[in-house]
Length: 274
Image (cartoon, rainbow, N blue to C red; front, top):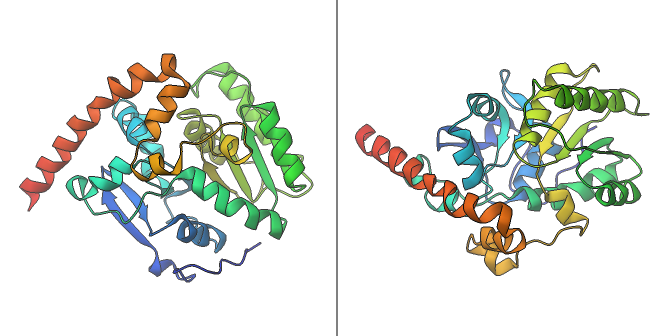
């Protein structure tokens, strides 16, 4: 299936796609998520050595990648790496190439989902909440939704491996092989599970896998996004801290201050390289 991708600035020529080398990764560079959706719907799945996987780093994820070689490898091999944090865009010229705009996974999911539904594309959705699964299946008859149990973020653990097998079994049992897999169980599980499924995919053609975090919870109304003005100024983290202070306060304000070290390192590297 190839869904029509009208109303964007991209044609279907892969050479027209833009990428930016920044923060140590090859980011997909576009003016809006409409252009990302156009590339996905037109069939772009990356270079020969890349995975048909979409990941959406923000500051928190970029800091996490610093300490995890496995995750760094997955992100570096993903066909679509989107800057989902405003600081990654605002300071991108210091970190490498300049990025045009923030490309939020939540915005992309909201933009591409109706097009896939209209086209009748077969979708496997892996989510963390039963109400999200029910809403997605009610909205799209071609969607099969699976609710993930509490699993380890270690791919070598027994519970992670068993759940990956369950996802593959569900995919193989669908009336139409899934063309798209949306994973919304939180980073790093999204990313790790997406890579694992693609590595072990039992069907002839691998799907496009989108690791989009809480995007489906936002789209179905189970969770509420930050107000538009906070999104515009890169302050969504404040909204998230207010919603889950015990879980996120220390992580965002203390641990993620390491972004300043990352910023300094890339700035110095770029200055010395000029």
